[in-house]
Image (tube, rainbow, N blue to C red; front, top):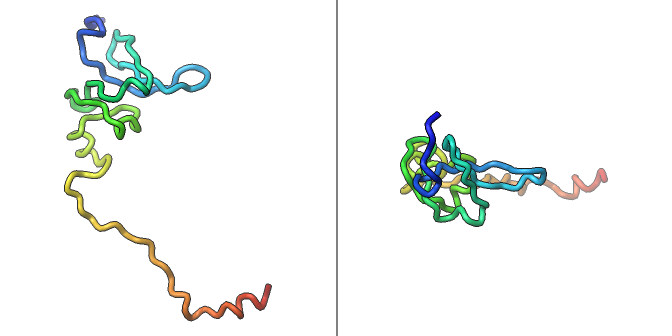
Length: 110
């Protein structure tokens, strides 16, 4: 098995896991031979490796929602999250027309 250099000498590939009886969420490096981990409070702004392409990126708040975070280009190409410049209209729920409903008839049977 190939040993990695000490934790200070490589970029980590963080994965979100639950640890212990209470299910505390921590971010652990998933590279073989690395035992580095961080609590959620300390992961923001850290540089890490993408799970898909291996490129370096900085952890942001939206990436904390994913178990295995990806860089922006891989995240957008996989259909996760909105794409830049996406201007599709948002569908509003339709409200039925109730002008022909007689409320007195409905209340009569109660």
